[in-house]
Length: 231
Image (cartoon, rainbow, N blue to C red; front, top):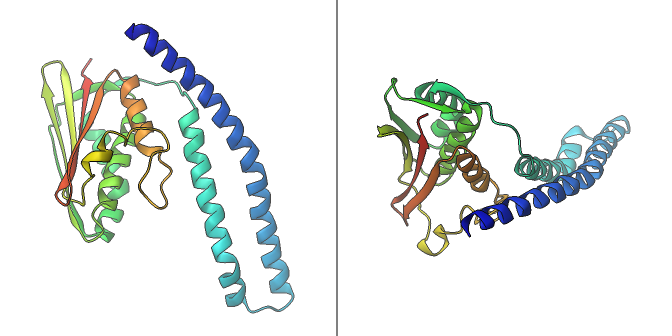
């Protein structure tokens, strides 16, 4: 029965992916045209002698909205694509260091202190780019949960034939009644969220034959725990 459910879920996901890719294509073209038209309009206004500051104030809201739409479309497309994984044996410390280089600035701006505790000898057979994507998503979510500063900690341990990764923060936390829904595609509580970040994270972990769970207490913080096979 479990195999039948997995097969049904795989077929449903495949159909959803094809549908999503088609929708993204149909929306992206007019959005791109709109962006070009707005840019042309801005150039025409400049040539007509309109004050540049006024042009910027008039068009920046529209440009911001277009950027948000493009960002959402990119998330949709990433969700719909079933890219091949390229597994290799790597040190998890190397993947984490690359991810930390990217998020350091955002952490500093939010006054978030980042701590990592990963043994350099812990190896894992995985797609390094995908696992980096997972770590980036979780760490950026944690930083967003601490707008007034806080602590972000990443730990890694080898347990038997598994590798355990933990991303913890002391941010605002996730209410218990919605914790079970956070991995559902398009589910979000953020004003500017797409609801795809954590669903993509879970999909990546599932394809690595791993597990991910979230534990959270409101006003105290959240911990995401990932377990991956080390072979």
